[in-house]
Amino acid sequence: MDLREDVEKYIKKKYKASPEYLWKRYPDYAVFRHEDNRKWFAIIMDVDADKLGLPGTERIDIIDVKIDDLMLRDILLQQEGFLPAYHMNKGSWITILLDGTVKVDEICNMIDASFLDTASRKKKDKFCQAKEWLVPANPKYYDIEHAFDETDEIDWKQGARIIKGDTVFMYVGAPVSAIFYKCKVTEVDIPYEYEDKNLSDRAKLYKEEGTQYYHGNLYVPDDLESIEL
Figure 1 (tube, helix red, strand yellow):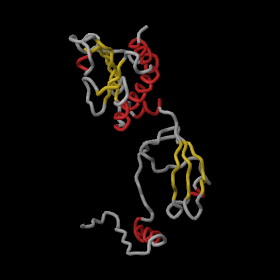
Figure 2 (tube, one colour):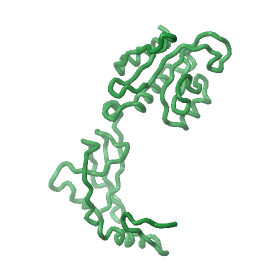
Figure 3 (cartoon, rainbow, N blue to C red):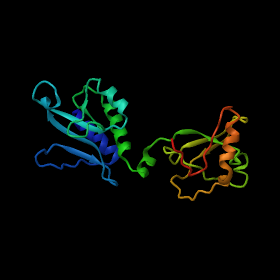
């Protein structure tokens, strides 16, 4: 079995995605996409070497995968076996040679990353590994010490990358400077209507707190107040 077959077998087994052959002119170009949002996460092609900027004219198997991390993309392009994306957006995709230059495990890792980069939120929750987060809680605005006195579950402001199953450590800053609770995220993207009990005097509270650390002129605008610079 050649490397192309190994990669296709990996995708089919892990992601239950079958190749789609979309072009009559290129019958061996295989697209793999998500079933729900229909986004592509990989395309396997056979291309003339000279079209990739390589010597010779023999046909070479390649795979294009999505890569959102531009710094990682630039690093990979300096390594043998990685090329600017062929046929796809060079700013967000990358080409990997399927000739043995890059190890199959590394190729599979790149496919996994591409799959997650293009997945729906629901699918990301299913495939992403749980992470741990340290979340600050200001006792001036929320009684975190007694938050769980009468319930086992509370709502909290959601960070952009937090997903169901993650662990959150609730941290209280100075003068307490301690972790109060270790929590498990049970739900995300909960609709809510925000109401701040301190809205009317929030600027005053922030100013009082700020003067503890800064002794110059301190100005805190009220909510929705615009400042001309």
